[in-house]
Figure (cartoon, rainbow, N blue to C red):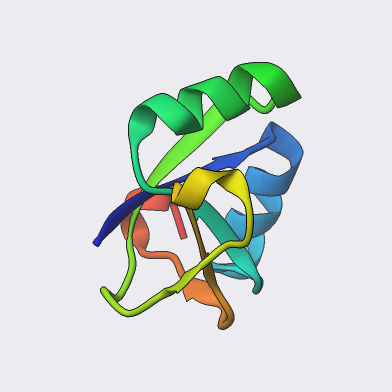
Length: 80
């Protein structure tokens, strides 16, 4: 499942430093919702991630958000 994680520059630098996004990893299932959330929160970075298909639905958010309860390991595409 392809999902979109919205983050700040400061947090993205921490992700790169540690090589993981620490859990819980909250995401959106479509880019439009991620863009809307990015604008409303002022977080300018949207990461495209691949999650397992059986990931939990995040309560609220009109069923458009997902949450992973384990750390998400980043790869070299993110400079890790």
